[in-house]
Length: 85
Image (cartoon, rainbow, N blue to C red):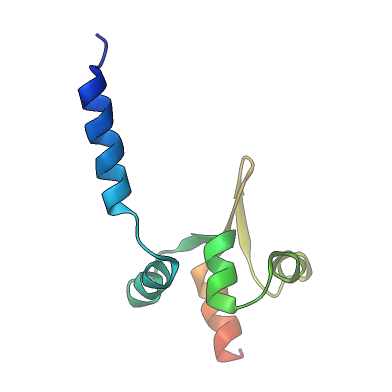
């Protein structure tokens, strides 16, 4: 069964309408925190660049979970770092 071109356009336009700005996404992460966040979202929450974040992951300041090629940072470790624990 093939999809019609009009179905594809509806799917794409519905995805575009769901996208939010970076600041709204970070606010949503803080209000209802998930267990794991992407490295990009962790950058925004901590306020450091990517290289500094990966050095913090390497020295154990932040905890990560690897799944294949994907790296996720635990929200618990981010909150502990921000609070200074």
